[in-house]
Image 1 (cartoon, rainbow, N blue to C red):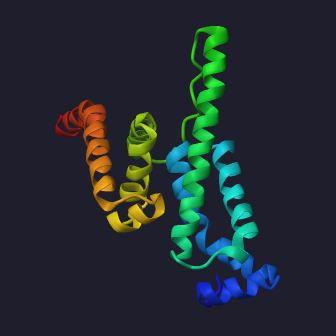
Image 2 (image 1 turned 180 degrees about the horizontal axis):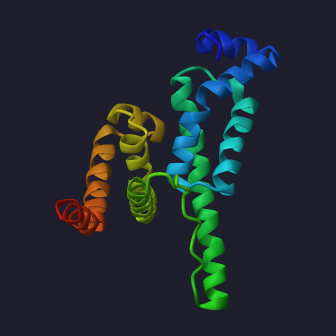
Length: 192
């Protein structure tokens, strides 16, 4: 990975230096993937949205003013594209339901098989996060899964910090409601 700061790489990329653009992609691809997978789960949709994030960024490089940090800007693009993908899924799912009167389940996120208990825990948390509404899910993904601060989350989502904290509180309460039985069951298995 390039040791050059973002602004220098961005200037080079704007001048047509594809290696500089590639360095920016490599620097931020895990942050973008974290947002997208947190919102959509692992799969083709997430891969497409991740790629589209960088395609959009490439097209907008010349107009990026740097009002926000580059990582914040890319997360915002990834979040908006993820929300659009969720809307497309919902429309598609509603068409299927109206035809079949049965819902088609969404792909489950992939987990590593080597740690069965850890994989089970990850699966349960991802399922619970996927059940949250878009507003709470976006805050939970950025704040808890990606570890952004409240202010960083507010900047990515273009919301007041108070709204972020409110949505986070409601999202965490819903996750506790959904996962409470699992936490108790897991504790009982360990105590046995």
